Length: 254
View 1 (cartoon, rainbow, N blue to C red):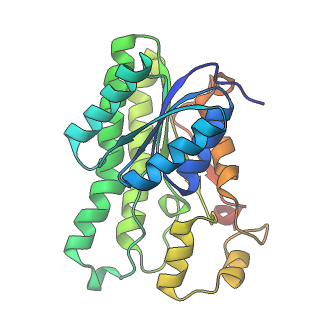
View 2: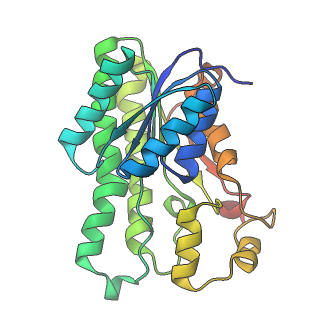
């Protein structure tokens, strides 16, 4: 079992899916977790679940597309637990479903605001706090296999997730010398409500589609991504920065 030994970790989009699994696993590993999500009801329920299992967690409502709210989220973490050691910038919207010629400008703005600008804002305020502390830290940005190779009919999501990888590498270059490690995880077909919703939206059969999206012929569980997140936040990954980890059952190698 990887131990976090009391590290304080913010996880955005932690109310469900990969974020929720990551929050549970990190709390079990001894982390002090800030469950951050726009969905207050689900976020509070997830926090209570962690507390009932013996973990340490607090909830903060946040819209990651708004700078003042992200700044307040980081302040909440520091006010609650005294410091910030790590962050999983995971909040995201469901992918778009129109090719560029049919792109909806309102949808473009909304998706970019959360999936790309939101990551940038989280990095901004998390890095500021870690620099203030002067003891380094570890940040993981959730990209996607769509950040590595394009997918049919999802240009905005593909652009946003490519941008997350670019932000990750740039931030790692700028702040690794100060001891702040910044990496990205690129999940593939992970069995989450978001994926199931997207498959329904596109009219795809989940079982048949799983075999097209993985050399292993199945969807991953959210916990399989959480395990990678945990390792990257922990001290076991102390020489890893500026990296992108594909958790995709070999999809991007196919």
